[in-house]
View (tube, rainbow, N blue to C red):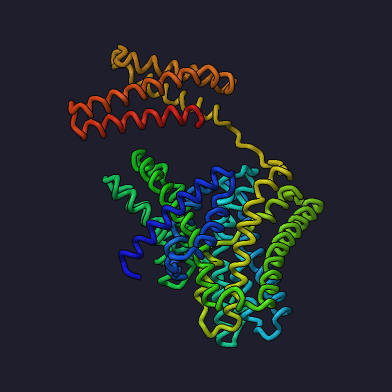
Length: 527
């Protein structure tokens, strides 16, 4: 494809992303579903060029920034607290699903080598971080359930990729040693953590010394790719390295990065992640056309292959439910035996957790890397697409409905301090510092207006802490007046600029000040 034509295709994809995302919002559909189905349907329109997704590029391009964004936003305290449950899903459930899919595939296709069957299981077993993030954005979940799903989505790709590489190597070589594989698995996992710590630590040292805002934002945006490529270069888990570096970034960015870098960086990251997430799903849809053409058309796919794909989809769904409820049963039994710190999820949260197993970019990209002489390669491609469509379209579209019907109860104890209490504590700390700095050495008040403003704010926050809804009702009209004043100021700023009375630099500086002020008021309104 010519470079100009490739650029034209990228522009077409971006336009489709905007249109499909708008339709999803309008009809209250999960955007991931709209992009996946829309991309698959549009791919067969005459005149559109064939878009080929290089699997290695897909993993390198999409996984690191999206995993980094998820790790950055992860609540580290809840992640540590629920790490056993997260590892149970990210490692245990993925291994179990791989084994179950392998057994079913070998039963249906007896001529397929066992290692190839388990390679298929590794392809479809890990729920995808991108799919989970895209679907879970529009739903409200209990804190423990959110921690489990978010943590699982960060780690399980590593498990699936490692299992896949072992299975492919065993298929092609005909040799497999369980003990050696387990040792290599641990080495790859721990090595990924080590590389992530090194790259994340280097970012902490570097970011604090970058005085230029743009350089700091770019260095932070490159962190995920740096961790992934560094880990892959030494043959350890790039996924684990990215997640480790992302957790470091999320923990230290509050004290390393200045406010202006955080504001710009978060805005840049939000747009980049939106485009990459959307591009993943629309490219999955477009890749369907390429796969069907490679197989010789839909009619060329034998009925037995569709039967196998359906059985694999059912096995993937059932295996996840089986693991979730069996694990919960073990926890409930342990609690009866006296391990009171163990708390089972219960059937409500377990049902939601079992249904939230969407697959995506890894399940798409990994089978495309299979060698052409891999036994059962075409069947694996069909099964991979079937699992992606079934989980994203069916499970993703119905997850919100299921949550509303099941109504999982949040049994996780809330933090000791509520948001109104935290805001009141901040206001008291600010007032205490102002009271010191507002007076001169002789006790004279040097900054009376600032002192009075912070005393009023602290008094209001005390009332807000006692009765937040009533305080907000009183303050909301105040915010409306301030926003109206800012709008009037912006109109006047634009008027005098259009009249040629100020330079563009003045316009941008003052507009930035008004924007920051408006953003602060909007956040205080809780919008």
